[in-house]
Image 1 (spheres, each protein chain N blue to C red):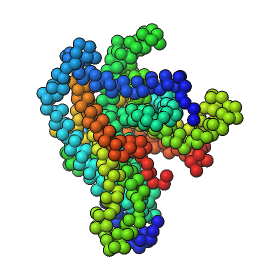
Image 2: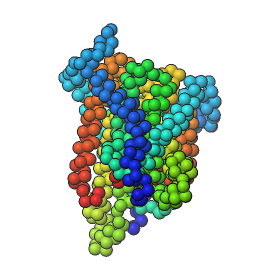
Image 3: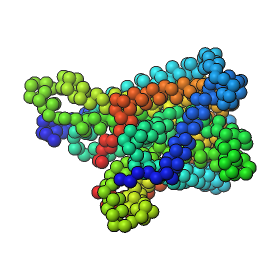
Image 4: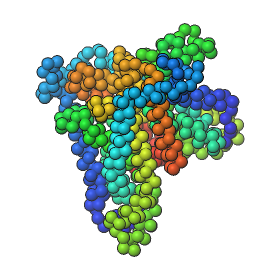
Length: 268
Length: 291
């Protein structure tokens, strides 16, 4: 294959700069020593990071987001792992339709989901509660949990299971001691990707969150609506740092391209 | 495939998928059906929501030019965003694919990574870069001599398209990248040995083969841009409404839920039709590539 020419490399350099610029500028502005938005030209300062401490609503929103992401991804896996095993192993009537239904939250705009959940939870008396947020987030992260578990279950070496069965293992023992350890990398990556999706969701959550159950993206969004100041950039910088850490871990253990390409769609 | 478990118990797959199926019926399909129903209810400033079956909201959307303009703006922004990501993302994926191992995975991480970074943070970055008439973007473009007077980016469709294209770019690069993985590099060499120049190779060899990737990327980018909320809300401000931000306003500010539900239902139906329609078109046109 031929190498990239100089023109291609110039294009590539500009492309990468533009992709990184908005993220970089948020992180740089977060270190400004000034009281207004400016790129730090006269020294770096941590004053806006310290200022976050004076806004308990951001701290609380952070804990809500963290708990919501961790819990909803876990609950989604409890439903997704058996479903993935069934879809990966059995050819049954309605299999494709089921798979399509389980992946459908990817297709439905989050604004529509937000409205549907708002309507549903208000009429069932759960409106604005943390439980409602968990249920809603389980639905939106389910496809991500399912995809990676499905990929692991499809690629699994079944002969190990057969050996275990021939040695007398069955049911729960078979699952706990043989199947689960074999698909665990996929399950953990599914959890991590689901967590990131839940942690970042704004569009659906903004409909459901009430004071006390506001997530970090919702809090940041409502804050930005009123005014943009260095405080929200330092909060964003912290969010970016959390996501980057998760990303690097995900890349080390699983490979980011595999995670993002979502290998393991049924029927591919 | 073995016969250890498969044939023995035909009920097993249903037992395994039943919990997830119940969950999806109970808290996805029922709420969606309730939303469609809601769009036929009546609403008044003082009486609130009245559970009757009328076409008032749908008639209002069909007749009031405000909604036609808003939907047209939504789709115009989505189309421009899709074009921009295709024009820039496809060549970038191609360049990326020709890089050597270590650089390739590094830049892939840099370009795809933003996909997982908070949309609010990314859009905030653009708001900072645009920032009024003397924002960084305008300063840079003017010092390069590309433009003579500053372009307004904040609270304009131009700004929305630029920021949305940035948010959606990873999807396009990823999709074209996947198509490139199926491409045999020897075909390029064969064309070269037969005397084809670089432009002929790109036009006759590369383009036709990555087109399915570009098109499936375009479908993803289009449907996500048409229903985007965070970026249009932050860059567009309170005046420049798109479908998602209008529905948000009806629900949380005006409290006219039935009308908001009608806007959301229409958006959902339009997107599903467009996505299914273009998928069918692509599969028919490029049937041989997918086989």
